[in-house]
Length: 331
Image 1 (cartoon, rainbow, N blue to C red):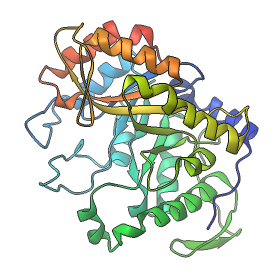
Image 2 (image 1 turned 30 degrees about the horizontal axis):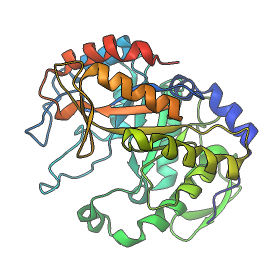
Image 3 (image 1 turned 180 degrees about the horizontal axis):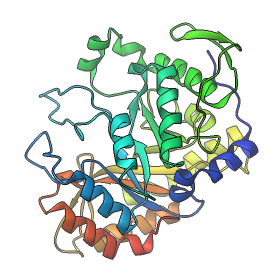
Image 4 (image 1 turned 90 degrees about the vertical axis):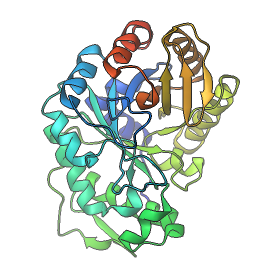
């Protein structure tokens, strides 16, 4: 089943009205979000989740743009990470009740293992209940050991991603939709999904390549968050993305580009930023300098996961709020 062709002008107008998208993304600007859990635990696969509501409220009050929740359904000891413990869709609903402005997103839902009709119902419901603060980040997953539990061939995850995304997008955006999928059923215009998103659209962002070409993502999805390259490669990284968006959707279409990774925030604010496995080690002022370079290159959002740091998380948030957020305020 092929994804429907987007109308760039209509899609941009609808997304620009949605509070989460408007808070996170704007041309030539960069915002800062946090990947959960809001707790440092460098030597343990699982966080304690103590004070997690208070920490989410602190992130909201300090002005961070988003809280991103990972999708890790099962613990695999060899991988050594359980994410934020709670299912992201349930957790978003819970945190939505305790926060007021911050965007709430997934980074990302493992789409090949999700039933897209139920996912569409969940996303639209969360978008309504949070008053438009929902962003759905989607990925293909990177843990082969999980796929047999769901009876799914790991090697088919790219095809399943496209199929599930097409069904999801059709039923969440169209009234009384028509579709026929080899995996996820069919509809002939006699049934409708209720509710629809609060502001007509809920942003659907690719987190990683999801076994797709970057050109496919640029054409079919609302944005892309990938691993950050080193500083001197940022311009080429951003130019490739924005060029593909322009070629597939028209020069007037804006689709945001994000980067993400672990952050080991050290005490010396001037310690130079270096790349580490899956992220960065840096002082706060050096991080701000790197993000200025990213913004100038054309990056629109950074999602940081400081769980690998060895300092108290509350202290890290205060330092980021003092030294980084003033340069990159949420919209």
